Image 1 (spheres, rainbow, N blue to C red):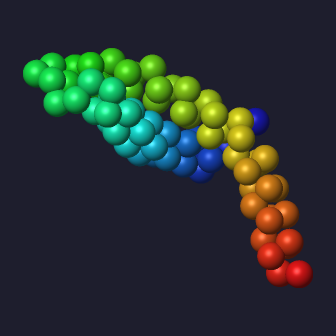
Image 2 (image 1 turned 180 degrees about the vertical axis):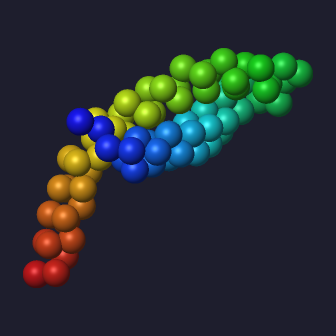
Image 3 (image 1 turned 90 degrees about the horizontal axis):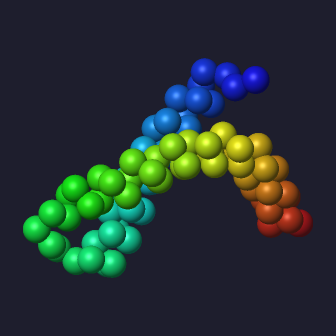
Length: 75
């Protein structure tokens, strides 16, 4: 079951990451064209829900990997 703090975190982090990454990659791909914002928004509307699902799905795995890496660095 998804708890509220994890879900809110996924919404915020998904928004920030998907907006940043799609903005940068769309700009690199098409440049500063006249309708850039609309093209970027179209790409972002696909990426945002994908980002939320990925954050929720991978959060525990990422936490375990982080803990393992930190443990290795201590030794």
